[in-house]
Image (tube, rainbow, N blue to C red; front, top):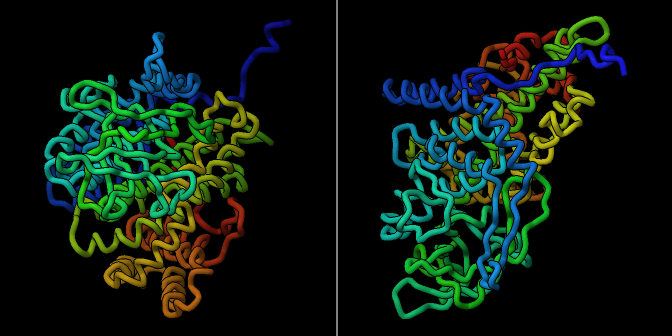
Length: 549
């Protein structure tokens, strides 16, 4: 075949070799805004340096190569060794451990004890989740375990320094002999799913105070090679939280039988297992008997916020890929990015990405502030954000893939991996109905939560007539809570959109806020992406989302 037929033209270069942090204007502005407001310039400067270094790594050929390898070579379950001994291990490709090591050493499990820790950690989580989402699961669970552990101060004194360590050790060894650990959780069971009060796993107390043995199963146990797991089980006093280590203090293996790995949608790098506890599985109680839900709720709230951040990361990566491709690809006489219809699509996608990032980072800042008002805001805004942002992820990624056409449909582009991952965060930690009902619960039982929400969105009142009208619409809906469950999704959607709109009006460039309010609050766009009013400054919106390589 003639060599001339293999001349490659009109193809975009790979989107690698760039700083994922500094190229993301919405993210860098959020870090500056929230850390700068804390009044500690040295913290902001340190965070910029850390995130810049991590951003350059996240955009490197090396880390993106690790992501490809970790997904090309999925984990394998090994239940027994060659002699027939039960080992219950999962083997991962070395690239998986390198990704985990990078995230842990970058402080992505260390938010709770350093200045601006949640904002810094959230930004880092956004960066590394753009590289590879699967390894973010154990990172997220380890980070989120800290508030649950604090329900048992003796345990927290030992385990919190290990969980927040910046050192990663992959071997299964007695945790107290390691310099850092990963923590997972096992909540759901096959008969209950999100209804954890229906759990049947039982806990029988032993003679030693706080020690139990468990009997039962867990339907989803992600990252099963973690050092320990927080699980819920029925103790004599009711549903209770327990810490279940993989390796006991004497070096023996706890009874933690991995029955099979799930063949799941999403990433291929992480493992999710079904786990059996055989009546000899040793566990340490966390908090009081019967208080399992109260203990675990802090962990759930933290992982729900990570669902928001994870979805924002997937959207950002997908939009960056779409804008990058359109900036190099020519069709019908010019670059795709200069075509009015493609520009409309790209701008619409960029709005969704920026709104998700700004909202996720605002909630991370509320975690750092930790005032009664900010805690009240988190109570209602986290489930609302989790509901809406995670639901927007799949259509955004799918449309971004379509912008690449056939080039986006092949695995080598990375877009199919993003698309497979995109539904995950909407399902994990309570699917859409669970989040909507949780918002209703907050509205009915915690007046401070609604007050905090109205204060937050009210900070932008008067700046945009479409936002003002949307706020009034939400207030009208809130005034009539009769039969509200049937319309809970609509209410929570409007609350999330109003919250995003208020943040963009206050903090985003005028062209971004104007386009968001027109398309999301003003009814000036259609149901599909790419239907924004052409009179808007869409070119500036697209340019803001562009990555320079």
